[in-house]
Amino acid sequence: MSSVHLDAIRGAAALVVLLGHTRDLFFSSFTAAFRAPEITAATLPFRHTTSSVSIGNEAVIIFFVLSGYLVGGSAIRDVRNQRWSWKRYLIQRTTRLWVVLLPALLLGVAVDHLGLQLFSGPHSIYSCAAGQTLVPCNLAQRLSPRVVAANVFFLQTILVDTAGSNNALWSLANEFWYYLAFPMCLLALEPSESKSRRALYVVTLLTLGMFVGRNIFLLFFVWLLGALIYVLPLKIPRRVLPVATYLVAAAFPLSVLLVRQSQLSRYAAEWVVALSFCVLLYVVLHSTGPAKEGVYTTVAGFFSRMSYSLYLVHLPVAVILCACFNSPWRPWDKSPLHLAAFLLLNVVLVAFAYLFYRIFEANTGVIRHAIFDPQKRPRMTSRIPDIDVSIG
Image 1 (cartoon, one colour):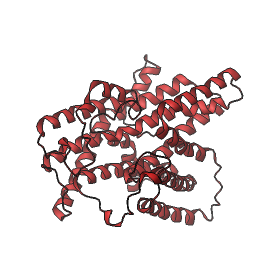
Image 2: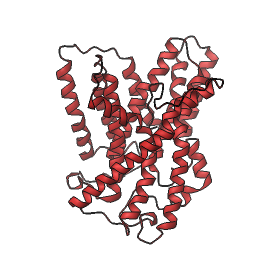
Image 3: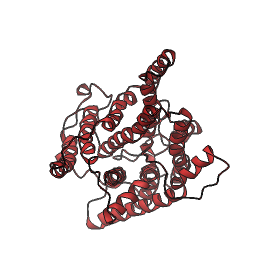
């Protein structure tokens, strides 16, 4: 049952990112009137930004903790059982990321080029319309071959911008470098490794930390929280577990909302969200009973399986749809008609992402088998064979 709950959390986080972006494209903030005054740079000791944490950013923090638990936990298990293989691990991680990322990049670049050609007016969302903050003003420069190629190799936010209008790609750079760094941390502490190899891992980690920069480096400690949860024993007594589950499940969304109204720095707010989610995750992992078939299990599995595809393809498609129905760009009023159109738009985006998932992400296992054992030809499948999380 805990696996079903994790599916539900993962799918819900992907939907939150989708709704956060489409809300920004069509409406002003629903909660702006209740927000704390914007903080200044002087109050931000950790991040060089004056923006508060967004709901989409909070969802990505949840993805990072889940990734630390699942991917980090898998690495811990292999090292403990002396089954660690860099080759197998890197193939699993890169295929997981690239099978969706490469076609998503091509799709996003094509859609952005089409949008720039069709909607080039001075007040179009593609022309840096006044008041909107989601589509970058240097969109054309972000579509250059250099930027796109760097995004293929997870160098966005390190050496280049994210490709085109797909700002969601920022988190993949974090995810990929955490995938590299965490096994090095484990092996640097592994007594069975030689001293020279352990020293090499430490030097490589320090070099990697300087290369990726401060923001990516600092959020690695958030990712590590998930791996920490993996090694904690499950100690909540069974008699108090139902009450603890309901209390924590109710408290977590409340804490997320309160963080958004606070004057915390962005990095501090991310830590509050991460720690709050760790409590929820730890409690959820105690649900060790068998899962029952039903609507909850089916819906959770559906959105969980396609969450990575939904995360990567929704934004460029949402931007061009916004240009089609909201040109010249302006925030919509929150009338019933506009809210209904907004709901329909998100349904269309989910349906498109599901089609994309069926074509690419669902066959990740086929590609892995082809790499590991090219003599075998496994049938196409809609299931990814290992438990995994990437928002990447």
